[in-house]
Structures are given as structure tokens and as C-alpha cells.
Length: 385
Image 1 (cartoon, one colour):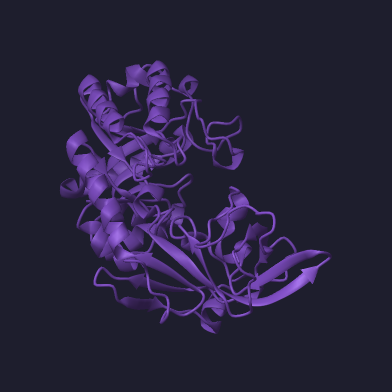
Image 2 (spheres, rainbow, N blue to C red; image 1 turned 90 degrees about the vertical axis):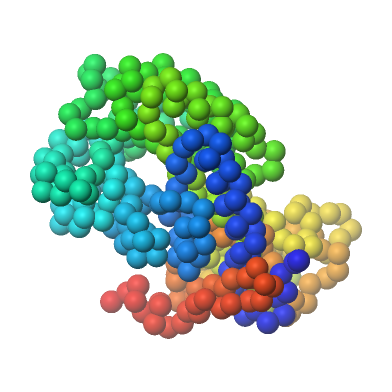
């Protein structure tokens, strides 16, 4: 059943629990068929109010900061798979206590901290941390440089020439993450590049973390190929395989509900100002960039139909999105529903200009709405001093 927005405040992120469960069910089927471990990546989806739902299907999660680690500990009840590009000395002891796996981004970080990991493992033999190192296979099909970790000058992972013939002492796993909402065919080509450069080290590893970007819940994704690839890698190198998708879990699971506040003619262009901000509430649309779809609207302008440039409520001149057409003229007070606004949206929001963050709610599987959180002045003030 479609979401009933009649009693939902605007603006509001609305997660559809049934869609989330559908995604998680598919992902669980994949991990069981492939014999791998699929975990949640908080960098894309950190809505901890539904972590109990996630925990029904997935056994863990990956973090890239101490704050994300704490969310995993508190709301999933497990230790984190931790990868932080550069660990802070003052946080490292707490990171150790809260993690089951810890991946170093560089050999410099490994050399600086490995002794502390080994000392911790010796003192806590029942809670030993498994150590990994991130590698850069120098192959990625991600077109946007901002999301491509293999470009020259990338901060993320070490290239093959930095390693000798053996993995560094105490390292159990190899981690790579070069995909971004890609298909399994891309993974197949990526694995070929990885094996060409790091195959000898894979034979020495106990686990391989393939990172995220595996958009297995997108229509048309070849999950059978993914399963075959994972099985083949597991068998060839006799290791555990871990995947940590973020977008795939929250893909098409919810919306951003908004209201038209004003309409103006700007030098011949009709502009609608909304109670949401592309810069503050949907920054990924400007960073990637991509144009979000709107329920009932034409994604591109249609000649002869009422067409509007949609803008946010901040004073940033660039806080707008390209033109959409509608079957009837917009009016002040009309409601617009932005589709697929759960992954890489809530995790990036800001209170720029003092605009309130959208509320967060859940359209539950019993077809009732539960408001989880609303924001106001205190949320804005807490960002500042």
C-alpha cells in the first residue's frame, strides 16, 4: 500500500518499513547462498531507530568513526567492523574495545598502531581483534572523481608496490572498496584487477572485505553472478568474504515529504521555493550530482506543461534543482514527495542558515505512521558554540 501522507509533518524523511524488510530479505538470501557475511555500512544509512529490524537479517555493521562505532554497539548490540582512514591517538583505545575487526588505511597507520592492537589481543584473548589492511587495486569504474578511490592522489588504500611478498605481521584480512552503486559485472572486472595485483597476498589472508557499492537490491542487478563470484573467491583462496553495502540496504525505502512555500517568476523562469533544502537536506544531489525523482512529476521538462525550477529555503543562490514539469500548475501549500531519499541523505544533512532538519518517521508495516524525531533550535545550537 502507498504511504498516506495526510498526517505526516512537512518536511519529513519517511522510511517504509516493508520496503526495508524486502531489501534486507533479498540481501539475507544472497549472503546465505554465497556463504558470505553482509553487514550494514553506516556511512550510507545510520537510522538507528530501525537497527533492530536490520539486526533480524544482518549480523553486523561497519563504521568509519568512533561515533558510528558507538551507534553499532548501542543499537545493534555487536562490536563494529572498523575502518577509519586515520585513527586518532586519543580515541584508539576505545576503538579497540568496541571493535571486532580493525582495518588500517595505510602501512604508516599499521606501523604506528599495530603494537597496541597486539597488546590488546594479548590482554583480551577472548575478544581478539582481527586486523586488516586496505588496498588500492588501481581499478574503478566510478566516473565521479569525488567517489573514485583509485584516482592518482587518492587517500584510500595502499597500491601493490608498497607491499613485499607477504602480508604485514599480524594482518589477517585485505579490504578494498572501489564500487559505488555498481552491478556485479563491475565487481567481476574489479576482482580480476585485484587478483592480478594482490592474488599472492590473498592466499595468505583469512578474510577479504569487498567493501560497499554492491547495489544488489536495484532492479536488474545480477545477484546470481554476485553469488558465483563470492563462492569462487572463497573457494580459490580459502577465506571468509565480507560485503558492506550501504545504499543497497536503504535503496528505494523511503521519501522526503515537502511543501511548496512560495512561487515566483524569475526572469521568465517559474520557481517554486520549498520547505526543504537541496544544499542542507539533500547535499548528495549537488555533490554526485543527480536529479531526484518526484512522485507525480515529470523528471524532465515537458513542452506545454507547467514547469518549475525547484529551490530550497536557504539564502544560498545555488540551493536549487533543475526543472520539473507537472500536469497542473503548482500552488502554495502543495505537497511534493522526493523519492529514494533515505540513503546518503540523512547522514549528510546540515543546519546551514539555521534551517531545521526534516523530521524522521517510519511508515510501519501495519500501515501506520510513527514519528521518530523532530528538530528545532536546540539541534541547530548543538552544532555551534
